[in-house]
Amino acid sequence: MIKPLIFSAASAFFMLIATAAQAGHHEKGDAEPNMISAESSIEKAVSDNAFRSERDMERDQYRNPAATLKFFGVQANATVAELGPSSGWYTRILAPLTAQHGKYIALNNSPSPDQRYERGMQWRETFIKHDGGMFGHNASARYIGQTVPFAAPNSVDTVLIFRGMHGQIGRGDVKGLLAEVLETLKPGGVLGIVQHREREDFDTDPKKTMRGYVKQSYIVDLVKKAGFELAATSEINANAKDPADWEKGVWTLQASKPIAEKDPKFREIGESDRMTLKFVKPAK
Image 1: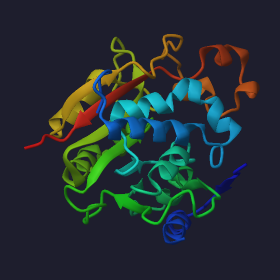
Image 2 (image 1 turned 90 degrees about the vertical axis):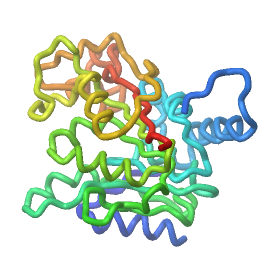
Image 3 (image 1 turned 180 degrees about the vertical axis):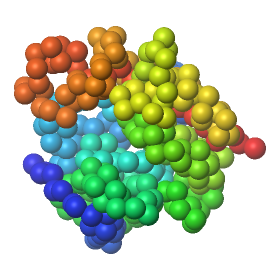
Image 4 (image 1 turned 60 degrees about the horizontal axis):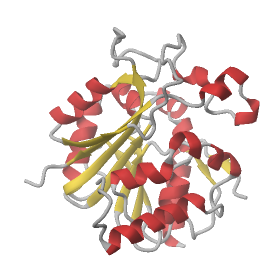
């Protein structure tokens, strides 16, 4: 079983990936052979415990990784970038999925010029101890939001942001980030977003709130104004049991704890109510 390893600096995170590198929604019916193969690869990556722990897998009932990745059209031979991999929950699915025939890119925000960067970014630098088989030979780690884009224009198939848009909005540079994602994606490439969903009847400022929830209407408008098209929405990760009105935000639900250690009330609720949005870069 793979155990977590904490890195206290961004350089350690990037060295980890570098070392490893060296060592659309489809309707049922007329599925193409390569899509069938892609779905099979996703199922295998999700069910494989070579890199995923039991604690990872107990969250599958809330995060629905197989259905979510299929909805976004992720393929094993694709170049897939994940923004804000944090402790690597999705990384332990995406990296093995793309290790042989694709490419995984771990994206972190650019360092800020002040001292707060080291403290504020440590949670993103939590990663896992692994063998070379997890990442394959093409994996890399990059910063997003710098002068040089994290990848060449029109070279990335999919960019995924899991439960992290509130942080990007709070940082204040989300428009620049979305512009870089748009530039690097191939025409028709996918930006997939899963985000804690704020109630539309709440009067909240997403740039100031520390609750972790963001209105779906706000994100859709923000991303469309950045030049993307909304291709599809899904309720795969919806949770009607979450009232989304917690004074201290989404973290009240204790998602970071093992299920057995959570308060019974929050075990019953599960994790947050989440939107699942598929955006595409226009073909022209």
